Picture 1 (cartoon, rainbow, N blue to C red):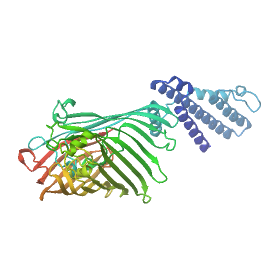
Picture 2 (cartoon, rainbow, N blue to C red):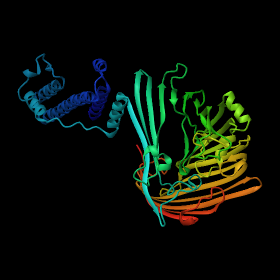
Picture 3 (cartoon, rainbow, N blue to C red):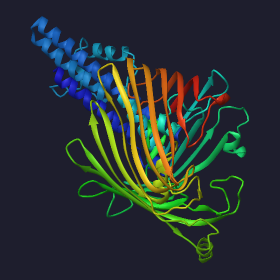
Picture 4 (cartoon, helix red, strand yellow):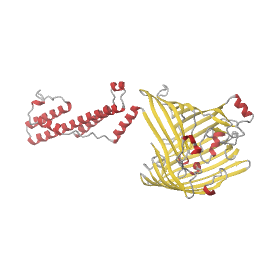
Length: 566
C-alpha cells in the first residue's frame, strides 16, 4: 500500500509540474505579462496542493477504518471501512461515491461518512513545499518563457605599495594574481525576438570597458589615458535551428566572433579574432566532432612610415579594409577522455589602388596577409583538466607571440598597423589547467615556450628573432569549500635578437593570498575575494625598460581584489 501511495504522489507531483509549465492557448494568444504568468503558476500549485491534501485525508480515513474493522472483527466493521473509503474518495473527486448496494455514500450509517467528512474539513491546507531542483526548473522556465537573459563579469579592488601607487609588470609572463590593479567589466544582454518550435532568433548586445581604479573622475570620454574606457563590443543577431541541413547549429550576423580561448593565469587569449562585424556558424555537427566557421571584418589604421611605431601623436594613417576567415573543427575524439581541436585563420587586406601605390612608394607600411594554424588537446588530469595548445603563425599574428604582456594573436595593435613584416614565422606551445594533488591541495598552472624568426617587435624592430619561456603555478591549500590560502609563483625569461644585438628580459613574482571562494576550483569558481601581498622583481629589463617607483627594480604591493561572474 505504501508503494502504491508513493507512486500516486509521484504521479500527482509530476502532473503538478506539467500543469505549471503548460500555458493555455488563450494565454499564448493574449501574451500574458510575467506577473500574470506567475499568478497562473500559483493558482495551479494551490489546486495541486488541495488534491494532494485530499488524497492524504482519504488514506488516513482508510487506515483508520481498516484498524476499526480489524479490532471489531465484524461484518459491520467491514461495511464501515468500505463506506469510509468510498466517502473519502468523494472528497478528492467532488462527486458522491456509490455504495456497493447502489446507494450514494450519504446513505451509509452516520458513524462512518460524517466522521470522514469532518476529518477532511478540519485539516488546514499545508503549504506545498517544492524542492530546490523544482524551483530551478520553474525559474528556468520563466526565464525561457520571457526570452530575456543577461550575464556579466567585473573585477575591482584596492592596492598600494611601500612607496607610491602600484604598477603592473609582465602580467602576460609572470601572472595576473596580485599584479593587476585596474577594473575590467562586461555586461551581456540577450533577448529573444522570435520563436517557433525549435527555431528562434535572438538579439545580443555586450558592453565592456576598463577603469584605472585610481581616480574618481575616470570617465569614458577621457579614454584609457584618463583611466576610463567603455565600448559596445558585441552587437549581433543569433539564429538557432534555422538551417535545414544543420538544425543543431547556430548562425550569427553582426559584431561578433567565434569563442575566445583564455589563458586565465596570464590574462591573454591563446586564440581570438577581433571583429568590426561578420557572419558565422557554430557547432555544426559532423559525423565526428563539430565545425565552426566565421568571416569577419577588422579594418586597420595603417601608419605612415614617417611615424614612430605606435606613436600616439602621429595622425598620418589610412584605413585599410581587412577581412579574416576562420575555421575550427573541435571535439575530435582521441580516446574516451581526450579530444582534439584543429583550427586555422587567414587575415588578408583588400586595398585600393591608391593604397597599394602608396605602399609601393614606401609612404605607408606594407600590409601583409597573415595566417595561423593551431591544434588543441584537452584531457582530464587528477580530477581536474589540462589544455595543451600548439600554434604556428607568420607576419603580424606571429609577432604578437613575443609580447611580454597581452600576447593575444591579433593581426593589429589596437586597430593600428605598423612595422616591417617580412614573412617571418613564429610558434608557441601553451599548457594550462588545474588538478588536485590531494584532497587539500589544488594547483593551477600556465606554461609557455615559444620561438620566432624574422618578425617585427614594437621594442626591438624589424627582423627580430625571439625565444621566450614563461611559467606560472598557483598551489592552494583548501581549508574548506569556501576558503583557501594561495601561493602564486611566476618566472619568465625572454631574449630578442635584432641587428646583431641581444636584448634580455627576465623576472619573477611571488604572491601570497587568503582567498574567499564559493567552490574549490581555481579557474572555474567565482565570485572570489582575495587579500594579497606581492613581491615583483625585474632581473633584466632590456626589452621594455620598465622600472618601478623611485627607479627601483622591485615592488612590494598589497591589496584586496574581488572578481565576480553573474
